[in-house]
Length: 250
Image 1 (cartoon, rainbow, N blue to C red):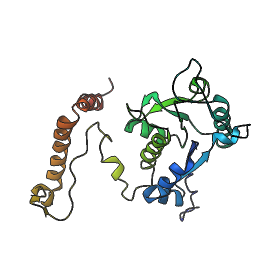
Image 2 (tube, helix red, strand yellow):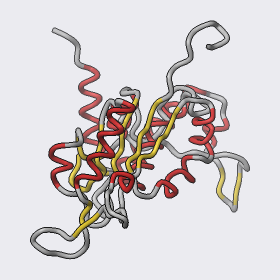
Image 3 (tube, one colour):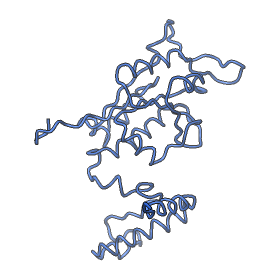
Image 4 (cartoon, one colour):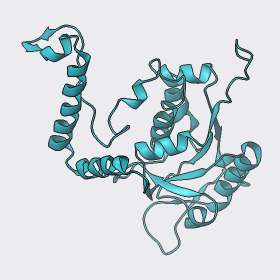
């Protein structure tokens, strides 16, 4: 119970189906996410597909039908691991990290943050049996157009991005809503701290003026300029967002 007598909010539950829990638990146990776990804001549980094998070697992979390099994760141990998570925890969505999935971005992070729970399935080797993607998970998700050795890094990216949108995770509640890709499609404005001059480079005068309206205008212009110079592909999306926000019901 909270001091005011209201029931404390339930932790956001992440379930991770992975062969390599230590690759993730070390990162998630430190810094901001570690504190969020200690305070009961997030909860992370792991399920190992090896626990659902039946042979002495705990085999979770096999050669691909049709030939080819590498090994493929077998469907049965992975399916049973996912099914146990569903039965035990009832995640709102089960997501397979995969190069074939929809692209993860800040909007997807916000979508996931509203779910309350999420199961992330980490592939390995040359991937997972296609029947897992087609029949067992709810969707596939990619964190970018490149190939990694496994889904654990992708799962960490998702957990980190989603967690920092949850109430109480960041020390400054406004921090998550004043960054690149958040609120608008634009990149974040430049940031400066002490000292005022460093190796011949001074902090822009406007940031030292105390004029909050001027600072806000400068930051808005910097976001536009930086996005135009570094990510011009985002400007069209920003224009579309701005047009949509200006529309009024007929």
